Image (cartoon, rainbow, N blue to C red; front, side):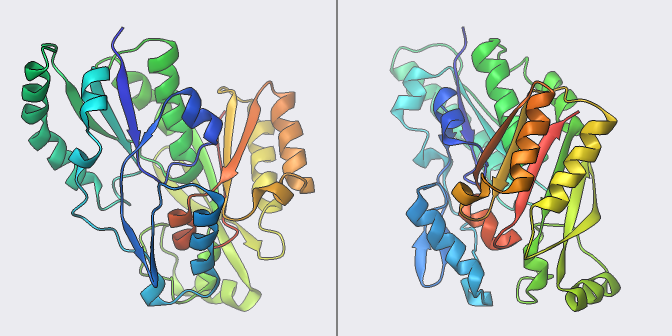
Length: 309
């Protein structure tokens, strides 16, 4: 069976157990956050909390900046070359992620070099290096990566056979996410992390001390609800409940991520209700900390839930 290295951007929100089960690799990125450089591919509590602290009192100087000189070759080392038949790099939505085209160009440049290295090691099969746009961010990005991993690791689909089922799966992901960063004028509207809103909606939300909840489905993103700092969870759970009343889960995993401490969140009445709702339909709920680099863009207490129904 062909064995691929599945390489992800550091912003992919998935539980640690899923990373380990499917042997997922993280691409190296450097994000600069004043006053210290914080590695986003370190999902330890200490580093993630340090990222979250940049969202408490953000300034324009503290906002992260992607270094475009990141080289794929830093992580395409001999271990990957000698133990894999190829590498599939799955990125977050390319319309939001400035590094996608950079990685795509590097992949084309690296391909002949990788073939020569494998040939020198008497590995004569062609090593395939491809970059794929997931079309999603946050928990929805994680859900698509889990689908890729399942199709390849469990069902044995090769790199050439993965494209069509993923093209069919990606538009079906229903993604709800909140953006507390809208409440901070320093973060808005320069970032491309979420859809723009007109000045009237922004003014109303600022006056009411609320922030938007968006839905992304089949390539369309729109604001459908508001949330507050006092309860950023319940509005999204209500939306999930309504979606699952309309039609049942068709993919067993429901992926959620939160920009904050998830231990007390697990006891939140709305999260417990969400767990019961998903379990009643034969699914299972995953809950993980949102990547620190994503939290610095979407805001502290951002909540993201992705499902397929």
